[in-house]
Image (cartoon, rainbow, N blue to C red; front, side, top):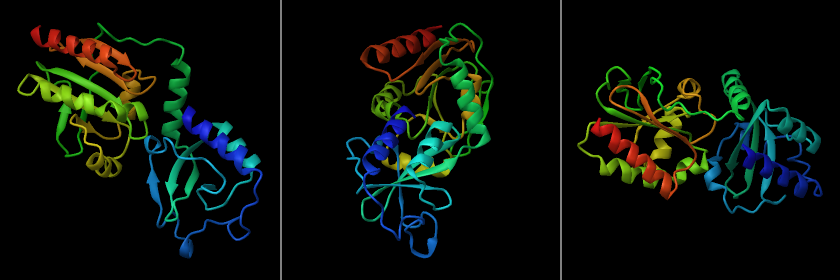
Length: 260
């Protein structure tokens, strides 16, 4: 979210000096006004290196209106809106403000409340869960008893989450045939995850719409990694992208959990 805020600020700074096309000033420039027709969703990891300029970026609200610079500032600072990026056929970036859902507001409020509190659940009992993956297979703490459970909390627009996927795939491969299950708890809906995973394979078993469980596990930021032992105790709890050292730490904890 900090990166999005910075990008929006850049749009405002650069875009304020240029007057928009009169025709596009108050309405979404889409044929027949079919909202978002012909636009392609752009995830934040794809925005790296994209030049921000008034010629390549446009800002709209969900009803297709172009807000004034002052309105954009107010929406961006209110915390009541999400900002998504789209690309039109001409390659322009469209920034779309939409009201935040009550569920997401609660998640954000809980994370803001706990952001200065270092969370480490190591040694505690694992929080029970019962979920379905994107193939509708069921997974629960109870039916995985006796196995080591490796959990990854993530979401599509999380750059660090996506960046570490190749290394996590290698980790999954190295434990084939072992009494271990890798579960990737994503915030995103199934219909968004399926096309994303075709472009960015992630070999964890993917569980969609896992916001409630991320709150239960006191996830403050993404990605967050958890290892649960065969005794259903939390053996490892780490928030942040896994660099070389932390991948080694995670592997060490998995190996120890498998031995015990």
